[in-house]
Image 1 (cartoon, rainbow, N blue to C red):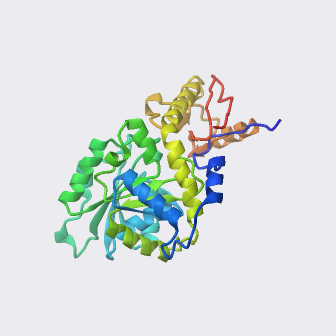
Image 2 (cartoon, rainbow, N blue to C red):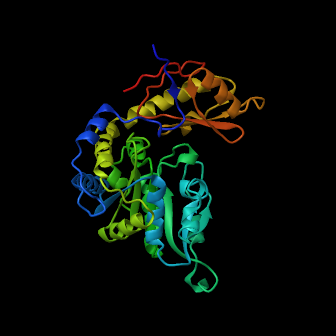
Image 3 (cartoon, rainbow, N blue to C red):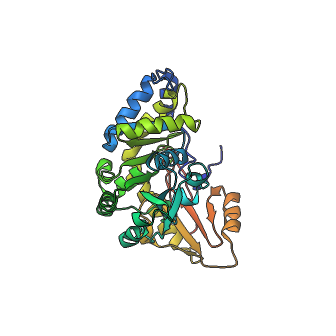
Length: 347
């Protein structure tokens, strides 16, 4: 009997389901760069409807989705985007908005709950009177859920307030929604309502909902037209992309409704970890499918603990010198005792 491995490193480690593989094999495809792939057109139209926006565009990755979105909004040299200091765009995307797009990041501290203080956002907006010296603020970026803050959800009320700030100052609002469906499930708010204030959203397909590849950008028709050109510029156009969109269709159809159960499993895991005296876990902070916990014993590094866990067929991710994370995904059930998660059963 094959040994089961409990892989808690990330919700990106899922494998395509049989239904996804069947959909990929049967997908009706054409050349998407010529605009004629029927499966891609159908999926993009459905994602635009789900997200409450005019149009959508499939792209190969979340990093490209965010990069394209920022560059469309900041299409004038000398533009500036306001970002959280713990945001994925700022920390994990190789500085692409500046190295490739010439966009200056204006950093505002993320609070532990993933928000940025409204007054600090307002204070970060550059005065037009100083345009001789300063970059021009054109964009505010939020992330929902906020991954580096432990998968925290930004409320619809908060998002609406940031949207009002953006509108008042003539700015655009982009939401990095790599796990936006998780936020919707946890908050009990329809996803289209959650992102209503945003001018653009990048929607992750290969994280919480388990598609093998890709993200979708949603926004106005004019925005998506410009995004399509930038996707080609960045090498993100794919000919028979309907094969990938077919798998994503299945993920959206079959998995979004199961995310609340993923969150429940993450809480079960966190509760089990809290019973181990060497770990420090804030149960109240576990809102979605991410579990972060700290090492109370300085003699044991997260890297060393991960090595020990791997010997016991449990995979986790070290973060820094004291912290590591376990990420619940749609592919696993969690079962915890006072020692460690002990069973992994695939859907």
